[in-house]
Image (cartoon, rainbow, N blue to C red; front, side, top):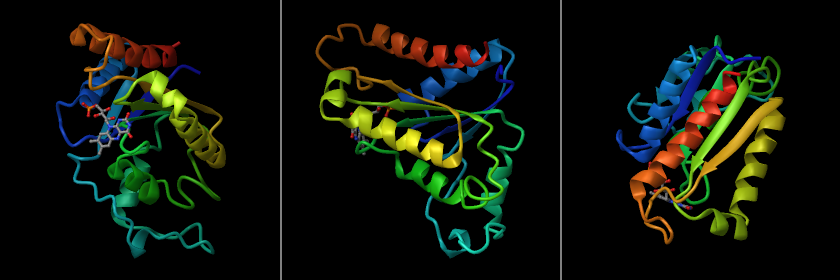
Length: 199
Ligand SMILES: Cc1cc2nc3c(=O)[nH]c(=O)nc-3n(C[C@H](O)[C@H](O)[C@H](O)COP(=O)(O)O)c2cc1C
């Protein structure tokens, strides 16, 4: 089904980072296709990624009431059919800000377990990788991250999930003569993820 309401979750400390520019590109592509788009800029929203006792799951009680911030942020997903997560790869993983969002907000009884409401949504993950595609594949990082995210999506019951990577994001690697052209190519790839959602 065509995406109508999209929610973009992203994490980067610099508001003009390449990650931020990719998010902008995806939002403007969404708007061109008539998709309603809302975003959660984890850094500038003042989100605290540290899970404390209030947000620790109670395995005997999927109806546990967590902190107000967690319920407020989880309810932002209610009317969205598509969730897009954009992040730079840090130590072959998520930035702590994003990991903390998953820990706290996609909590037991909300994101997974009885009553979970994420299962029916489309999920798209876009990871910005500083290194080359060849290196990322050679050392098993692409498979590692793909397996990890797809495993998590299966656990949540999300049937429609895709993971994409933008490589050479620092733009200084061998073979990149024109950094602007290279970034335009990355933007086009990011925009194509959104245009495919509009079909
Ligand atoms: C703390 C930190 C850890 C990083 N770890 C990796 C890594 O494991 N693999 C990689 O290819 N790039 C790594 N990078 C490079 C980032 O992926 C790269 O800077 C980012 O994708 C560029 O986009 P940006 O300009 O939006 O930050 C790391 C960068 C930082 C700051």
